[in-house]
Length: 467
Image (cartoon, rainbow, N blue to C red; front, side):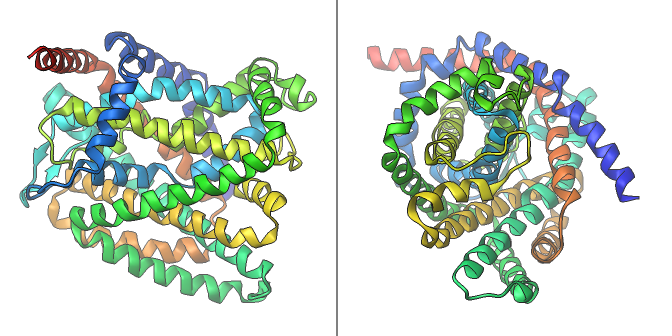
C-alpha cells in the first residue's frame, strides 16, 4: 500500500518539478519581468531603500491589519525555514555546486514573480466578517478573474489546506526534534533510547505554543514574527559569516566551482553529477521551495498589511526573495562548500550536511547554536503556514471553521514530533508544487494588471519628486 502511494507520488512529483513545470515557472517569471520592464533590477535600489525605511517606522495600525514590517516578517517566517538549511544541502548533493548558480537565476526571476503576487494580493483583497483584511491567490483569482475562474481559487485553497499539515507543520516539527535530539545526544545529556519520550514532550510543548500564537489572530502572529524572524536570521548569518571568514582562502575557488558546475557539473563532481539539466532542476526547485515565489502563499500574509499602495507593499516581495535566497541560502551553500566537509554527490542529503559544515569549523559545541537556529526557523515556518492554512480553509468554508482548524493544526505538531515521517516529506513536496499551478495561471492572466499598477505607481512617484 505504502509502496504504491510512494510510486504514485514519485510520478506526480517528477512531473510537477520536471521540465514542463520549470518552463512554466521560468516562463511566467520572464513574462512578468518583461511586462514590468524588469522592475526587480531596475528598481532594486529603490525597493531595498523603501522596504528598510518602512520596516522600522512606528505607526498606528488600523483594525484588522498588521504593520508592513509585521507582514514581511510573517511571510519571511514561512519562507526562512528548513528549506534554507536542508534544501540547499540537498540541492548541492544531488545537483552539485552548480545548483546554487541556478538558484540565484531563479531568485532573480522570483523577485518579480513575488512582487507581482504581493501587488495583486493587496490590490484584490477584501475584509472578512471580523473586519480583517484577507487576500492571496484565491482572492485575486476571485476578484481579478471573475466567476468563471472561481473553481481555480477553490483548487488553490484545497491544495493549500492539504499542504500546510505536511510542509508547514509535521515536517518542520520533525526538524525541531531532530535538531534537539542531536544536540542533547552529542553532549551526553540524552540517550538514544530516551528520544521517544523527549520527542513527545517537545511535541506537546510546540503544540501548545503554536496554538497560543495562532488562536490570538493575525495581530498576535505579527507580534511574534516581528521579534522571532530578525533574531533567527541574524543568529544564522553571524554563525555562517564566521565559517566563511575562517575559511576565506577557499571562497574564490568555491565561486569558481559554482559557476563551472552550473554548465559542466561533471567537471566539479568527478562525473557523479553529469546532467546539466539535473543541476538546473535542483537549483530552481530548491530555490522556489525556499522563497515560495510562484506558490503565492507569501502574498496571503502581505494582504494583511496596513497599506493602501499595492505596489509599495509588492516591493517587499523583491526584498523577501533577495533576503531568503540570495543572502541566507547563499550563506548555507558557502558554509558547506568553504568548510571542506566531504559531500557524497548523487546521494540525498539534508540538514546534517549543513551542520557538519559548522561543526567542522567551530567544533561540536556549535551544535547547540545550530539547534537553536533550526528550531527558530522551523517554529516560525509552522506559525506562518498556520495563517496560510486558516485563510485557505476560511475561503473554502467560512470563518467559523478557523478556530477548530487552528486546534487540529496545533495538535499535528505532536505527530510530527513522534512519528517517522518518511513518505510525508515527499508528499508535502508534491502538494507544495501543486499549489504552483493555479497560482501561476492566475498571475499569468493578471500580468497586465501588474504592469498597469507598476507603471501608474512609479509615474506618480516621479511626479512627486518633480514637485
